[in-house]
Image (cartoon, rainbow, N blue to C red; front, top):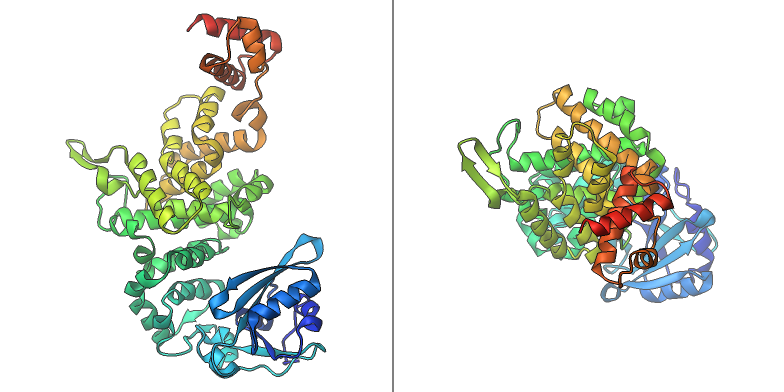
Length: 495
């Protein structure tokens, strides 16, 4: 075995089924093994047919299989491990005459290493023709060739993710390639842009990655709607133009999600506002993790989808900008922005479920601010908020907090922050702790009960009365079946 490399147990499980053809563990799998980082995603290069080997392996192990890229003869095997964890094995035919040519055509040197594997469990010496191990020790991200990024421009986005994840410095020549790749990103398929961008947004250090994307001027190429916000003047208390504000909102939101999920703690809270947010969010950590980890479809978690929505939350401002005696205003920008956010999500081939989440989040991101004017945030007001925003309620609350933070050069005025945080505390408590009572109470009467009691036929009037009953229950005005029966009689008479 190569010195310093511990072969993951998941890989050892597949070795006996590999067969006689030469196979190498390659790419990030080797890099993570050198770092001692756990992973469940493994890449293999095969001298023979990657698709055929993947299918045979799946049959032997009783695992799931599908063609990942038939044109490049790449197949994927999904194997269930202990405790229900899933390991992903991708088998690709060599790209080139041999393993050295294959590695030379990869993206970065720290991904251009290979370990030869044989069924007996033996592991050959590390193959590292480009000095990837040394670059990894130096924490330097270096392209494999002068044309590595131009050959596949999505690697520019990947460089940001790897630099932040591995805490690497992007080497100067590679940095030049990254900057030059900006106009080339238009050539990349929407699906590949989506997948690389969402992997970045799903990182524990997504905040730093978003900031680096902006520093390298890649944000606008990935999200053209952001370019329209460049230089867009905003009224006080906004300290930044539309573009910088949107990027700052996404960065602050990533920090808040990290505070909610425990990926960041007191030591990472950069100022008093974040420290107070940590106290508010930590109360809902277990349910909060479940909420942001939920994947509406295709395995893309809500936390990444929420950051995507945050980048687009003010996309409607350029089209709604008006200048009045009171200054610049953006009336209805959230409505226009929600439509643009759907268009952007459709462009990246997000699912219809994901598009709907993004639309609702952008459409309602101003609602928590409007609730600040309520002298007392009643149960009825809380119920109406969630009736409007549906399942994205916590997303809207978190985005609202980040949106407010991004208006100011830190520190935010603490009285301004505490007003919004107070609204957020109440709404999050309702969602995570009082859902059955305040957010979505089950009516004490059914539709049939209402029809029988009032002599009504089935129709919209029954639905209207049930909606009123549900709101009255949420407000605490109706607490028993007897009160519910009296309420529906009164509601029918008040029509």
